[in-house]
Length: 323
Image (tube, rainbow, N blue to C red; front, side, top):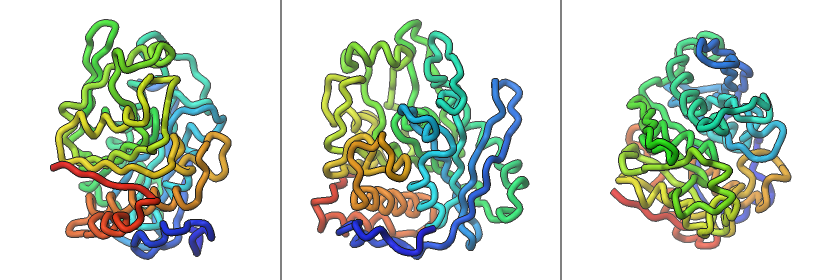
């Protein structure tokens, strides 16, 4: 973990955060899965010190990169969360350029297998712990969150209780897992049907979201300039649908000036990030960490303190909540 903040984090430094510690990264842990075309590879990030550590499973997005759509991506989030008290597990999904595997009709982008990867990681926690000597006996397997960005946000949403109703045949995919106590949806996807653009219908023909039973506490993070015409004719508000269309408790965080990359969460200085900003990234890092700490550490007040600080800095963003 870096010993100090980037010089350009600006007022994001006013959002309080617990003291960071150094981070170990162990990669890959390989989980043999009988019904998967490839073994499941997982990167493990965790703090050097601390016991009874909550777990966050982080699902990568798709994008156009050669490496970020795998366990190699999202270092700015994974390392930060680990430095502030979490074991962060990053599976490589079959959809990534990392594998460049063909997909079948109805399973474009290996979307269903992506969500099954979350369950596979949960089922494999004992094996992951055994494979990483410095982690032995330090996991809190009762406190688990799932996070995801972009396509990974939909992956996470399904594990958090959202359902997919196939536009083709009406079949329902429901992979909610009660072991998951909280979630973070980063620039997620909204309503389908007439809300999708023509290209969106071609890109995600399988997509038919139903958020009405996503009851798990979730923080939905959106950029107020995240316009995605390749998927929807709507504006940035489309990405907030997982908040508005699901029951509480939910929190909605708008990041000021952010596009789909939220300041650079997928990797350091990447071309995919159209809104590169150390300040914006630092705000996302700190606020998501605060949310996760309050969701997974009993009695923790980090989210309350962070949102109070954010209210004094409208240039960073805003939060709304529902019970």
